[in-house]
Image (cartoon, rainbow, N blue to C red; front, side, top):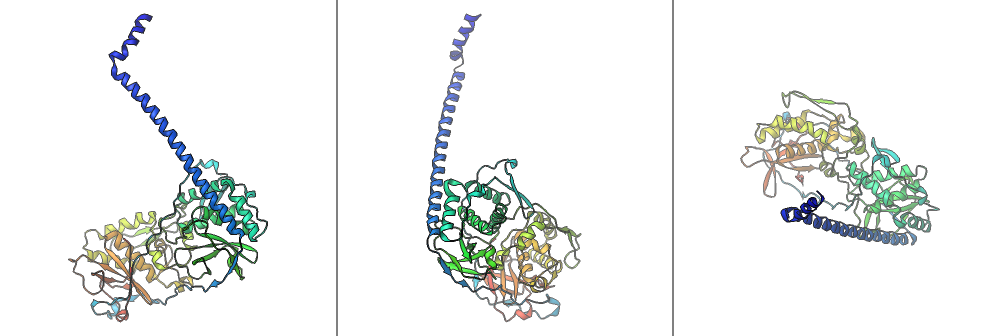
Length: 496
């Protein structure tokens, strides 16, 4: 049997040339794959080394900047929040004092601000949750980071020499990289915008150094700088603080001009009335400012608010529907600095709220023509909410992010205009602009040319946009309250 078996084994390649080719091809492919994998690993190690060397060089140069002479900077005059007088009560079309139909003259036309490119980030592979021994909560959301040797940050003082030495020790040999990676991982897991990431980093620093405000500020700046953002250290009466450069105007807070850029303060130094010292020079070339826009909805552990029911025969005979929002996100919104209202209008609606509100509005407008559908959405904004100015409800100016309309008991003209614009654009696909008056915010909608709409309108880029005021009770598309007939509104275009 053995000679016969040997003969068969010798004949197989000649009888089955396909088998021989397959074996040869597989062998060649495996060899090719191993070679390419080895090449990629070599390339990856080289690039990683290049990046580490680049970041190490930045930290070494920055340490020298910290060790140089610091200057005293003058505090800029605070820009007060735009506490514009608003209608104390909603308007009513029943008064019969509407403006005459026709073209409304406009002032300047403001385009949406261009988006600032995102910070390029390469995230590491996440480790199993069990490998995160340091735990904390961020807006009701459990978070974990790896163990960090807190002795790496050794601040012997707040003079420039001590700060420089501490920076060198903390950032030497990529010691800070694992913690940076943990922060970036959490940023993506919770879908944080830049402001959310800034607060997250502050929370990490407070968790690691609960009894040292100086160490918290120092670590927060280090983490944000390594992440690509524009922050720097400062000193007030022996206390360290963080300065951050935002991409947008912030109201009601102190700022300083350094290297031609506006910086705002964070940390314990905010409450210290004393001269502020800092230094010139960025951590890296063209660092990314802290953007105050919310480009994605934060993913926090749900903590539902009390459900609210919306039903009114004034705008529809459809059955009522109920909504609740995530209180964890509402708490996050409450910590937001005061910015221009257009930023609130650009923020997304929560997936949970959108999953309820959008289907209801699509169902109610299904089968209606454009004019009927817009008038229904106007009626919803007129009657579904109670009206109150921010001053009366909060004692301060507070434009709402979209979800906040369904959490607080009242809203005002800005909130209604922003919500109505989003509904019309998303549900009906129509273009909308804001009409900004000195004491009021309304909208105007561009209807299809065949839609028989009449009334007051503005012209933008050669197209008619008919006034739609969700604060005017009973007002239909084209109705402009008489008190604004002699006003010249500014037009704010909205990104679709």
